[in-house]
Image (cartoon, rainbow, N blue to C red; front, top):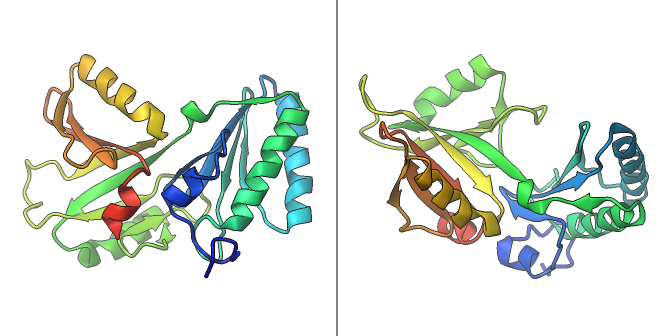
Amino acid sequence: MTQDDPRQVLRYPAVAAEGLADWRFFLMRLHARFATGSFARGVELVDRIAEAAELADHHPDVVLTYPHVDVDLHSHDVQGVTSRDLALARRISEIAAELGIGSSPRDVSTLELALDVPDAAAVKPFWATVLGYGESAWPTEIQDPGGRNNTLWFQEAPAATGEVQQRFHLDIVVAREVAEERVAAAVAAGGTLVTDEHAPAFWVLADAHGNKVCVCTADGRDLAEE
């Protein structure tokens, strides 16, 4: 398959090379936030996005709030970003520019929840049932079918048993240019840097009590997963 194949899933280097200034790529989606400043302007933008989506026969996830509109793009049939998403992202940026609406790419992020477990298969059905979640494209995670709540994924940790050891941690995924600033700010707020061994894919931080969190980007993460 070539990059122009509408079913080829694209990774971070290919997406980054497209120069989509309004958009950031992580967790197999394109993310954008448009600063409308008012609900009425947001509705206008959403209406125009809907028209473009119908023409393209390709539909984004859109969240309208008072000060901004969030747009996520991915190809549901292949669970990733394809050339279809790149084309619609460009069109949506054009529409925003026509309406005089700017973007806030530094503000986009996605929060994941991670549970350290010695055997994901042993607990995954319980968590899927109790949360009302469904399967994901990745076998080690489950997700809200409606797309509103945080994804839960299971990280292999053979020793993750007992009453004291931390079992949950948070992964906050941010735009690449924000990551070091976020890490530095967290350390200044009383945290510690546990390791930057895997940066820029992720940095591991801990609070004053030792509770850990990862600041993640798409840069290097796909290669680490593969």
